[in-house]
Length: 443
Image 1 (tube, rainbow, N blue to C red):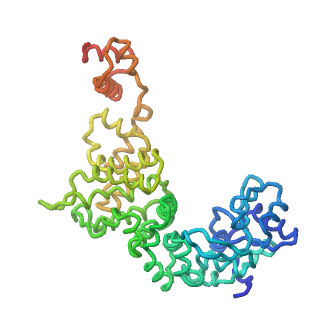
Image 2 (image 1 turned 90 degrees about the horizontal axis):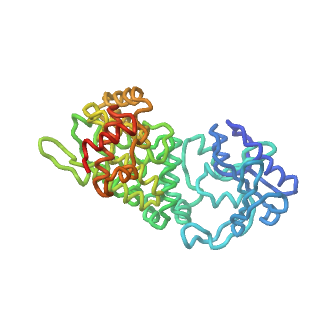
Image 3 (image 1 turned 90 degrees about the vertical axis):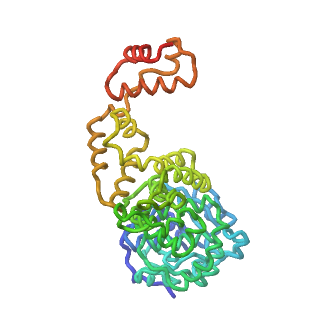
């Protein structure tokens, strides 16, 4: 397909990105905005980043611009710093074999028509002239955008063999844009799912989070399951499918349906909340039992252990793992909030990331029985308690030592009793705390 100026942009390109491309034109080179930014501009979505493709070789790019970083010069990529932003400038190239399933063994510099052939999907293979703002389409990407189709460029089996992460990227674009995966591309994807085993855990994690935190996350999870990818990357989550739940509490269906519904209800979630929802019921398959009804005894405890392992496998940070695991471990406690002692309730409401806990509970209810009584109770109590949810610590271990108490396991019991009394407003000063300790825990 030749260049076309028919498609109209629905968004305004970043002026700094245009300036970078135009400076290359002024220096006598060809240059275009390329890839996902063009797709987003045609759809009216703000691009997250901008790439520039050019026939200037890396050393020539570094001569044109004062501030550059040769981040991948061996593959023809130079980072140009313009204003406060950075832009990847890549030389048009054709790739050789991909022996490691990610990096080409060699690259050959070429023209734009050949360059776009190495890209993953037609909707990501578009170019934009930085002066006329005309779209240049050599792969049929504009037609697929109009039709709502995710189609591999060229032979889909070859594209997936080059980089198996493209398997998950196909799912992400289809879910986020509410597009269909073209039949040949979908067949090749299903045939190539085992290739995802060669992709690093970090790259899988990042692509998974892009699916879970984007639009139509539940549909993304459904596509991962339908294509066979979910069983490869998260078998414990794939095991949710077909696990029935008590219909009086879960009329929506099995554990997998429930989780997909919750994800679809989210709006712009952070990665911890999205992962917490994905994994909140992961302990149900191994704890399933039938008695008077279907039950999952202590599934939150089992689920927290599984979530911790999954987070470690996917290389989440220790802080993220702690937050995600807590979301899984604590999600059943909401059923008892109206019966908690004031001190216990305040401690529950005052835990770190409680907003994420509360949102998980909200969508958990909406995706099942629909009752939000405990959700509203927590919101009202948190507002009523205001700053007293987590009061200042009145005593520390050092204070107990100064009072003559020998260090040991008893300290936890003493300090918890002091915190409970403060949470229930029975004491408010250090002096009152010391008196409580002496009366309740004689040396």
